[in-house]
Length: 100
Image (tube, rainbow, N blue to C red; front, side):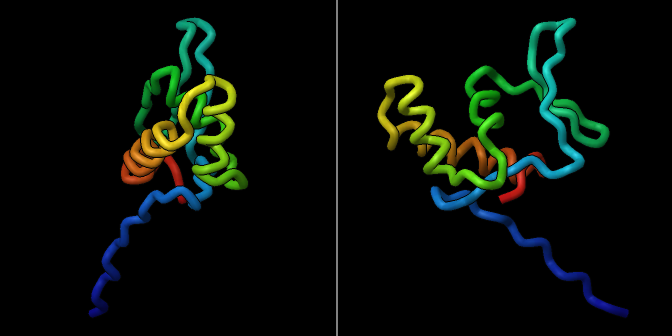
């Protein structure tokens, strides 16, 4: 009998390059006028801020790059935005919605 390997938790940091796994889709529900995240047997309804972050999670940009872009777009302090994004990315990674 083999012992199962314990699952490790990915930790979100500024250098992480978050992306949606292939089986997770970010879609706009035109009928309801909102964005949804479609996952196997689950549906998430991200708020407007999360949608802007998720649109930039392409596996190429780092969390820092995403924060810099949003800081520029919204004329906001990058360090505050980066901290919020790290927290959000960590929560979504823990739920299996993002890979780091």
